[in-house]
Length: 98
Image 1 (tube, one colour):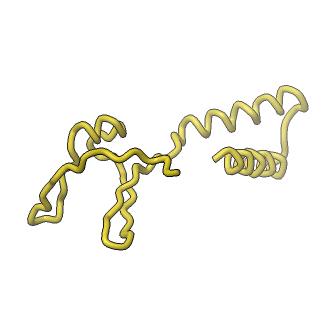
Image 2 (cartoon, rainbow, N blue to C red; image 1 turned 90 degrees about the vertical axis):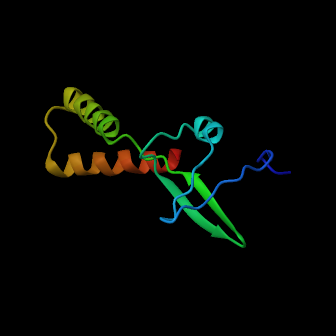
């Protein structure tokens, strides 16, 4: 059973520059704003667009440094090697949750 819902198809036109307008109701449903990034796939006789969601790097770094600050508060100053290990552990945990 498919997890995708099918709706009535919309028609759009490819411009001379190869641009395509995505209907507003679909942009709104996906939260697409100007400059949003999309992955483009060619599947059999179709083009599939998928919203590309990139992590918020500022948020990621704050989270990482907060974890390191907690370790420093608990154990005292960390060596460069200990900080690198903490970074690797943080990245490994993030990969596991995606």
